[in-house]
Amino acid sequence: MEKCTGILKLRRNLHLHLIAQNRTWPPWYLQIPKLLQFHPKSYTLMKNLTQEQVDKIFFEAAVAANTQRIPLAKMAVEELKDFLENGNIRNSVNFPACDMGVRDKTRITILHRNIPNMIGQITSILAAEGINIANMTNKSRDKYAYTLLDLENPVKEEAVAHLEKISGMYKVRVIKG
Figure 1 (cartoon, rainbow, N blue to C red):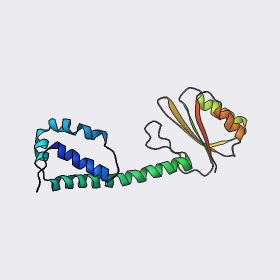
Figure 2 (cartoon, rainbow, N blue to C red):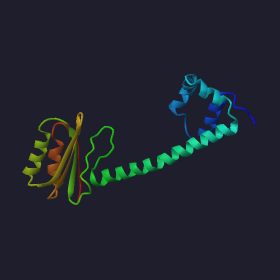
Figure 3 (cartoon, rainbow, N blue to C red):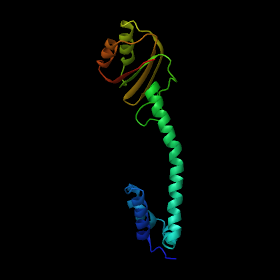
Figure 4 (cartoon, one colour):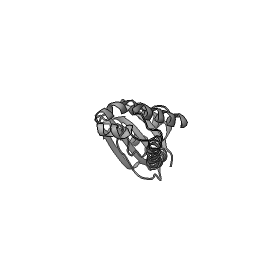
Protein backbone atom coordinates (compact mmCIF):
# COMPACT_ATOMS: atom_id res chain seq x y z
CA MET A 1 0.00 0.00 0.00
CA GLU A 2 1.08 3.53 -0.77
CA LYS A 3 2.24 5.55 2.27
CA CYS A 4 0.91 9.03 2.89
CA THR A 5 3.91 11.36 2.43
CA GLY A 6 2.74 14.02 4.83
CA ILE A 7 0.30 16.81 5.18
CA LEU A 8 0.28 17.56 1.43
CA LYS A 9 -1.21 14.14 0.73
CA LEU A 10 -3.76 14.73 3.49
CA ARG A 11 -4.70 18.07 1.91
CA ARG A 12 -5.04 16.46 -1.52
CA ASN A 13 -7.37 13.81 -0.15
CA LEU A 14 -9.50 16.38 1.63
CA HIS A 15 -9.58 18.48 -1.54
CA LEU A 16 -10.74 15.49 -3.62
CA HIS A 17 -13.35 14.62 -0.97
CA LEU A 18 -14.74 18.18 -1.03
CA ILE A 19 -14.75 18.33 -4.84
CA ALA A 20 -16.72 15.06 -4.93
CA GLN A 21 -19.32 16.68 -2.64
CA ASN A 22 -19.29 19.95 -4.65
CA ARG A 23 -18.17 21.90 -1.57
CA THR A 24 -15.48 24.51 -0.90
CA TRP A 25 -12.61 24.58 1.55
CA PRO A 26 -13.60 25.27 5.15
CA PRO A 27 -11.55 28.03 6.87
CA TRP A 28 -10.12 25.60 9.44
CA TYR A 29 -8.50 23.59 6.64
CA LEU A 30 -5.80 26.20 6.16
CA GLN A 31 -4.79 25.87 9.82
CA ILE A 32 -4.12 22.09 9.71
CA PRO A 33 -0.34 22.36 9.12
CA LYS A 34 0.06 24.96 11.89
CA LEU A 35 -2.00 22.85 14.31
CA LEU A 36 -0.01 19.73 13.53
CA GLN A 37 3.27 21.58 14.23
CA PHE A 38 2.12 21.99 17.82
CA HIS A 39 1.28 18.31 18.04
CA PRO A 40 4.36 16.46 16.75
CA LYS A 41 2.96 13.12 17.86
CA SER A 42 -0.15 13.65 15.71
CA TYR A 43 1.98 14.70 12.75
CA THR A 44 4.12 11.58 13.12
CA LEU A 45 1.02 9.40 13.21
CA MET A 46 -0.57 11.15 10.24
CA LYS A 47 2.44 10.94 7.94
CA ASN A 48 2.73 7.18 8.53
CA LEU A 49 -0.89 6.38 7.62
CA THR A 50 -1.70 4.49 4.47
CA GLN A 51 -3.98 6.03 1.88
CA GLU A 52 -6.70 3.59 2.90
CA GLN A 53 -6.44 4.65 6.55
CA VAL A 54 -6.62 8.35 5.64
CA ASP A 55 -9.72 7.70 3.51
CA LYS A 56 -11.32 5.83 6.41
CA ILE A 57 -10.63 8.76 8.78
CA PHE A 58 -12.35 11.19 6.40
CA PHE A 59 -15.26 8.84 5.88
CA GLU A 60 -15.77 8.39 9.64
CA ALA A 61 -15.53 12.14 10.20
CA ALA A 62 -18.12 12.80 7.47
CA VAL A 63 -20.51 10.19 8.93
CA ALA A 64 -20.13 11.68 12.42
CA ALA A 65 -20.76 15.21 11.11
CA ASN A 66 -23.87 14.11 9.21
CA THR A 67 -25.18 12.22 12.25
CA GLN A 68 -24.91 15.42 14.30
CA ARG A 69 -26.35 17.65 11.55
CA ILE A 70 -29.66 15.81 11.22
CA PRO A 71 -30.93 16.49 14.79
CA LEU A 72 -29.69 20.09 14.58
CA ALA A 73 -31.45 20.59 11.25
CA LYS A 74 -34.68 19.16 12.67
CA MET A 75 -34.41 21.47 15.68
CA ALA A 76 -33.81 24.49 13.42
CA VAL A 77 -36.86 23.63 11.31
CA GLU A 78 -39.06 23.17 14.39
CA GLU A 79 -37.90 26.48 15.87
CA LEU A 80 -38.44 28.36 12.61
CA LYS A 81 -41.92 26.86 12.26
CA ASP A 82 -42.74 27.84 15.86
CA PHE A 83 -41.53 31.39 15.18
CA LEU A 84 -43.59 31.73 12.01
CA GLU A 85 -46.76 30.19 13.46
CA ASN A 86 -46.61 31.44 17.06
CA GLY A 87 -43.94 34.16 17.23
CA ASN A 88 -41.84 32.24 19.78
CA ILE A 89 -38.05 32.69 19.80
CA ARG A 90 -35.72 29.97 21.11
CA ASN A 91 -31.94 29.54 20.89
CA SER A 92 -31.31 32.84 19.10
CA VAL A 93 -27.87 34.40 19.11
CA ASN A 94 -29.05 38.01 18.90
CA PHE A 95 -32.57 38.01 20.32
CA PRO A 96 -33.95 37.06 23.73
CA ALA A 97 -35.69 33.73 24.27
CA CYS A 98 -39.42 34.44 24.42
CA ASP A 99 -42.03 31.68 24.38
CA MET A 100 -45.77 31.91 25.03
CA GLY A 101 -46.61 28.50 23.63
CA VAL A 102 -49.17 27.79 20.93
CA ARG A 103 -51.47 30.70 20.21
CA ASP A 104 -55.24 30.37 20.12
CA LYS A 105 -55.97 34.10 19.71
CA THR A 106 -54.63 36.88 17.54
CA ARG A 107 -51.01 37.49 18.54
CA ILE A 108 -48.84 40.53 17.92
CA THR A 109 -45.06 40.10 17.93
CA ILE A 110 -43.06 43.26 18.45
CA LEU A 111 -39.30 43.74 18.15
CA HIS A 112 -38.22 47.07 19.63
CA ARG A 113 -35.42 48.89 21.39
CA ASN A 114 -34.96 48.06 25.04
CA ILE A 115 -35.78 51.52 26.38
CA PRO A 116 -38.02 52.90 29.16
CA ASN A 117 -41.76 53.38 28.52
CA MET A 118 -41.88 51.19 25.39
CA ILE A 119 -44.39 48.76 26.95
CA GLY A 120 -46.44 51.71 28.21
CA GLN A 121 -46.67 53.18 24.71
CA ILE A 122 -47.64 49.83 23.19
CA THR A 123 -50.37 49.10 25.74
CA SER A 124 -51.71 52.68 25.55
CA ILE A 125 -52.19 52.43 21.78
CA LEU A 126 -54.00 49.10 22.11
CA ALA A 127 -56.19 50.43 24.95
CA ALA A 128 -57.11 53.52 22.89
CA GLU A 129 -58.28 51.18 20.10
CA GLY A 130 -60.39 49.21 22.60
CA ILE A 131 -58.23 46.09 22.35
CA ASN A 132 -57.86 43.96 25.48
CA ILE A 133 -54.58 42.10 26.12
CA ALA A 134 -55.24 38.51 27.25
CA ASN A 135 -51.59 37.55 27.79
CA MET A 136 -48.26 39.34 27.44
CA THR A 137 -44.56 38.47 27.61
CA ASN A 138 -41.64 40.86 27.22
CA LYS A 139 -38.00 39.74 27.17
CA SER A 140 -34.86 41.71 26.46
CA ARG A 141 -31.24 41.11 25.52
CA ASP A 142 -28.86 44.07 25.45
CA LYS A 143 -30.36 46.74 23.18
CA TYR A 144 -33.23 44.59 21.85
CA ALA A 145 -36.55 43.65 23.43
CA TYR A 146 -39.20 41.29 22.10
CA THR A 147 -42.83 41.44 23.18
CA LEU A 148 -45.59 38.92 22.53
CA LEU A 149 -49.21 39.97 23.03
CA ASP A 150 -52.26 37.70 22.83
CA LEU A 151 -55.33 39.84 22.16
CA GLU A 152 -58.99 39.31 23.03
CA ASN A 153 -60.17 41.31 19.99
CA PRO A 154 -59.01 41.44 16.39
CA VAL A 155 -56.45 44.18 15.77
CA LYS A 156 -57.16 46.89 13.19
CA GLU A 157 -54.68 48.14 10.59
CA GLU A 158 -54.77 51.60 12.22
CA ALA A 159 -53.56 50.18 15.53
CA VAL A 160 -50.68 48.38 13.81
CA ALA A 161 -49.79 51.60 11.95
CA HIS A 162 -49.72 53.51 15.27
CA LEU A 163 -47.48 50.83 16.83
CA GLU A 164 -45.06 51.00 13.89
CA LYS A 165 -44.72 54.79 14.33
CA ILE A 166 -43.38 54.52 17.90
CA SER A 167 -39.78 55.69 18.11
CA GLY A 168 -37.52 52.66 18.68
CA MET A 169 -39.90 50.18 17.01
CA TYR A 170 -38.17 47.75 14.63
CA LYS A 171 -40.89 45.30 13.57
CA VAL A 172 -44.56 44.68 14.31
CA ARG A 173 -46.12 41.45 13.08
CA VAL A 174 -49.71 40.25 13.49
CA ILE A 175 -50.41 36.51 13.56
CA LYS A 176 -54.13 36.04 13.09
CA GLY A 177 -55.91 33.60 15.41
